[in-house]
Image (tube, rainbow, N blue to C red; front, side, top):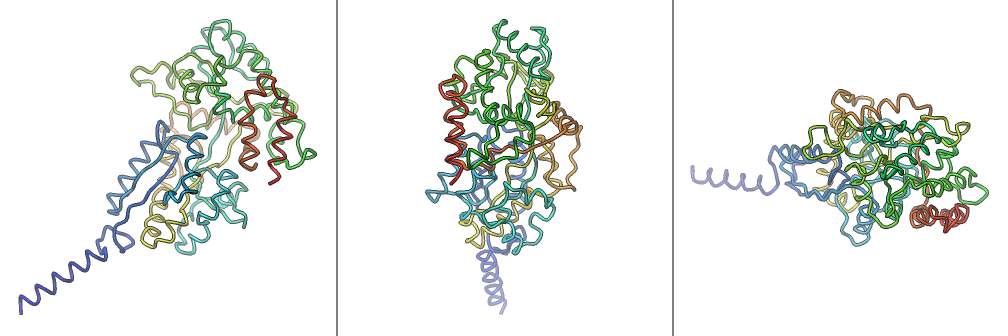
Length: 430
């Protein structure tokens, strides 16, 4: 009799193992491995935190993660999109929203569908964040869970400004004065890869002319095209002719442009709140947090662009792919993993690690935990008279690529702003 009971007990234990009844598996349907792709890789300031979040979640659930994250750039964007076209998409994705993700809508699960399965999914994210235009698909449904917003501004190496006797660029005149002083001193005034990552200069030159109002357009005809866009893109040539950019701006990579700034060769660098600057105690670092002053991109016309205006918003979020959703075991794990990364506590940690501002009212970041650069961004946002979104996020991808392909031609005068914008408008109709 005892032998029969022992055999029955052993059989029951085996059955439990086969059906995944371990208390560590929240879904109760066996351990799974998720392929996850995010922007939290490379030298992204949130990369270390994300690794910790992965390890903690794995330990808590017993599930596994294949982390294929990388620092976001245009090459990375294209690779992620290409993976979907070949059936190699991940299970969980932290990716841009807006028109860049539009080709993937049918391969991503919208938020209301996920909430029908788990009502707690994204419950803490502000409704205004979920339903912002660049996070809605063709059916008007939110497609991602953003966790924190961004801001963009001009990074300045205060040490170099002091060396050449230049004031920080608070208006166009002081910017041009600083450019001339850095050029005379043999320093690169503004480091940018016009041949690789020129997109910040699309937004900010238009902003410098037209202000926040100019950001609220998605022109599909020449009649809808603001004159401020034509005049704004004309500032690329003004800056180029003044000697603001590196001599190899057309051929160098964006990584090189960052290196020029971080090794002290360049005085200014236009980027976002996610841009990572070494801490003051980083061994071998030539430019550290204490050297950096962050300022709003200078206004060219103060009558239209109120000084201090900062481009800001929510441009990325968490997604579950349709491929993952159709696998019931992976579905439960994917929901749980994203919920783990979108609690108020987790969002606060992401803000503390990489700056920006929380997508949840309940996520309160400790500002004393922020580095010097991100404390400056917080203050810029508090002082900003306006915080518009960037228009490129709602334009057709093919339209904005026209600018990316022609930024150098605009700067060198080989093409005119009106000519390039006319071509952009034609592509923006589709």
